[in-house]
Image 1 (cartoon, protein in one colour):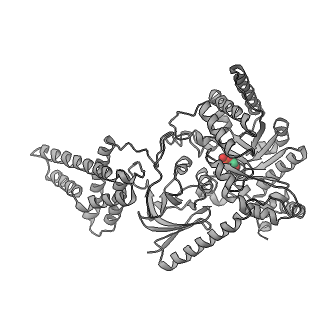
Image 2 (cartoon, rainbow, N blue to C red):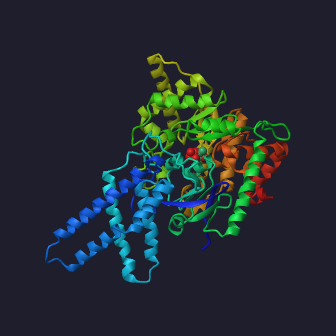
Image 3 (cartoon, rainbow, N blue to C red):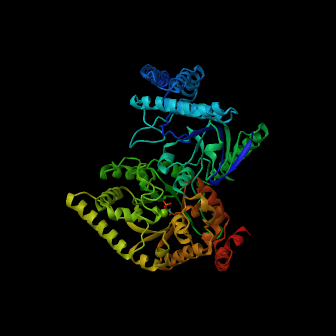
Amino acid sequence: MTFSIHGLAVSRGIAIGRAVVVASSRMDVVHYFIRPDQVEAEILRARVARDAVIDELRRLQEEIPKDAPGELDALLEVHLMLLQDHALAEAIRHWITDRLYNAEWALTTQLEIISRQFDEMDDEYLRERKADLEQVVERILRHMKGAASPIPQLIAPQSGQQLPLDAAVETPLVLVAQDLSPADMLQFKRKVFVGFITAVGGKTSHTAIVARSMDIPAVVGARAASQLIRQDDWVIIDGNEGVVIVDPTPIILEEYSFRQRQNELERERLARLRYTPALTMDGQRVELLANIEQPSDGAAAVRAGAVGVGLFRTEFLFMGRSGNLPGEDEQYRAYCEVISSMQGMPITIRTLDVGADKPLDKAQPKDYYLNPALGLRAIRWSLADPVMFRTQLRAILRAAVHGPVKLLFPMLAHKSEIEQTLAQLRQAQSELDARGVQWGQVKLGAMIEIPAAALMVRSFLKYFDFLSIGTNDLIQYTLAIDRADEAVAHLYDPMHPAVLRLVAEVIAAANVAGKEVCVCGEMAGDLSMTRLLLGLGLRSFSMHPAQILAVKQEVLRADACKLAPWAQDVMDSESPASMLEH
Ligand code: PEP
Ligand code: MG
């Protein structure tokens, strides 16, 4: 039966595919795609584990004391019957062969399907047999753990491992999960999943940002999605409207396929703007830059028409490595890769910004402090670990020999933090000098993403060559709204007058001081904000590459001179949002 689930639209476009529901089962298993030549071995692995459990249960049965209650024997008999069920073995074979799922994934997928069938049964006795099935599956999984396949995990990736993502799965697949970490998200390549749905998450959560950067339709905060959507259901993700349609009728499918084609046409039309200079109608030059997460994103940024990287979120180099952080040389190579792919265009490298919704590792307990967004994150983290911080600074300084690099520090708020940061930088430079290693000059920038920093912008301008406004955090901290919490997502308002006032004042102060200022939060790629930001005097926007040409189109249609007085009216209004709509 067709039904829809509403969530938050975080990444545009329409995706149609079959649902792969992960982590909805209470069993925490690894999920990855195998290669077609590994199918038989994987089926065998599943069978060996099942046979081992059968042997185990038979032994248990033999050892039952004579005076034990008869139910025990009957229970084991039920478990044995479930294990030997031909249909179960066949289903597992199907998931492994047709979908190239690893054995654990195949098993839990089938468990979910059967569990639902049990849930729908009228007979209470039969309904309760679901628990038996779960126990049986858990036993098999335990055996599989002992005989794990050497293929790396997809959904719980290990550091530095190459992932077999070139799965030859024909059917388009849509990933449905309760939650995904930003690092998990990065592991998914377009050819494996055509879209994502998560039950939790906010519009500017880092998971959403990564989905946008990959240009894959996504809806987050679709509560209960992982309970309501069943394995293999056909699903439509409308990433423009934030709607998920499950089990669509042929007419609905036809409608969305049509919209999908329209989107493609629109993209093709925009692609023509790639080499058009971003000038407003009155001839003002606007810089459209890319936000990237991985060194390999540089090439895509150039293809998307970016004239530089305005924000390289380096934390993604550090994530999911079980504490084995990249050393100076590895980082140096990563930064050089971006420099080389940007072909002489400027690159703004931001130092590590981990913490809050960007844990270094999944294992890091999420709630060991009460307010992670207010805790040890970003520059605070770096200053708390100066050895790690200087390693990164040295790698960036060395890379700066090869191209125009700007160095950006996240989440500064205190004068003392600025001073400590600059002292660490000087020390990193001295360390390179002491080693006789060459390093390049870099422009220094501060993220303005804490209201305190925005209010003290003039002091910041004394220390830094440029500013970058991180609206994602600036909104979060100004309005006290957790950017990753869908329960308060409706209050996360980029057009709140307080937010706009802070943004406007930072832009104005930088312009008066003759220093560069950029917006690199999601606001920069939000088409409804482009004209206002231009009117406020912003000339540098950094966003996920897929949005660059759409923003360029807005720029080309804008008359910056006329927008300036209008922007002031918007700022004076108590309801800026209504003025933007008009
Ligand atoms: C921001 O806060 O706006 C920003 C660009 O940084 P991040 O999203 O990585 O926190
Ligand atoms: Mg930020």
